[in-house]
Length: 38
Image 1 (cartoon, helix red, strand yellow):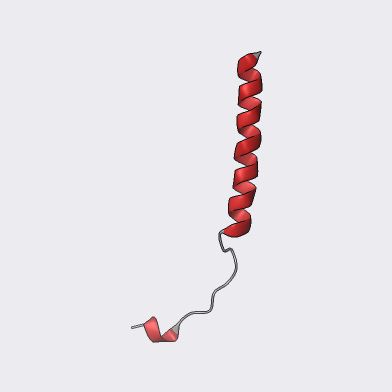
Image 2 (spheres, rainbow, N blue to C red):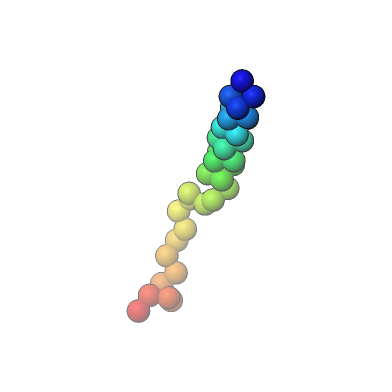
């Protein structure tokens, strides 16, 4: 039973950190910097 509780807690932490990462990692469009193109 202890392992089930530990696994559930780990799953909650993993889901929360995934949501936080997706919220902060820049899925927004960034305009292309034309000066860096060849």
